[in-house]
Length: 284
Image 1: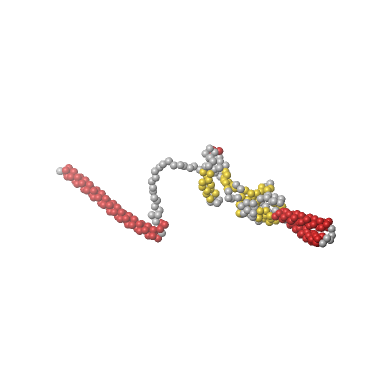
Image 2: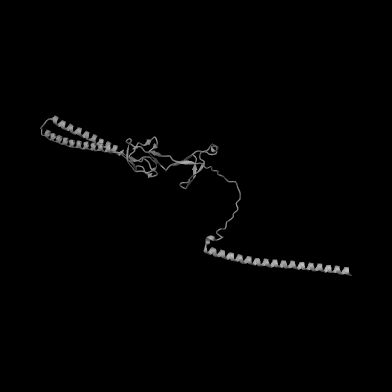
């Protein structure tokens, strides 16, 4: 009896223990379910608040619209296509039309410089004024000689006319008439020579003005007042005008690319300082 009682008690204890454990587990499950439901409710509430705030922001600031930030995705079938490979090389821009200015009347001292480096110039624009003191003196002398001959010619014509009037009245000799006529012819010839001389001296005077013979940009201006302008010195040209209407880019191609670059190949020119890109050039 005692043994059966002990066994029965043990069974009751074990059964009681198992029943208590099952209740604790169910309680824990119910607690977690309740907690999960509460969290889901909080999540739904937060998502609703987030959507409301986003809607308000989109109304206040359209730039923040999520619709504008959406990225569209498209599908494209892969297929073979032409692939252009470019190599980067450094080069320099050069003009095909460069003018080196020189004095027409020979080297002379500069009296005035009317051009600056980098300035745009046009054909026929005055660049320098050179010393013209001697040319002005020669012009003054030539004009004075011209006026003298004009006076002499006027006097000779008057004498000839008087001599002719006398000859018409059978007064005087034929030699006097012929002499007066020759004097007029001689002075007329001298007058023409004097007029040509004045033109020559004026042209010489004009050579003291140095003009540009092309349109372009003053690339070099290496001359100052008081210096002698002679065009080109041992240091290089004193004034160089570059015509920027026809430019080309020159550069050196490494030997390992020589077989890959041919005449007519496409070239893209980038000028960083000017922020200019020229697409579609060709190798010449």
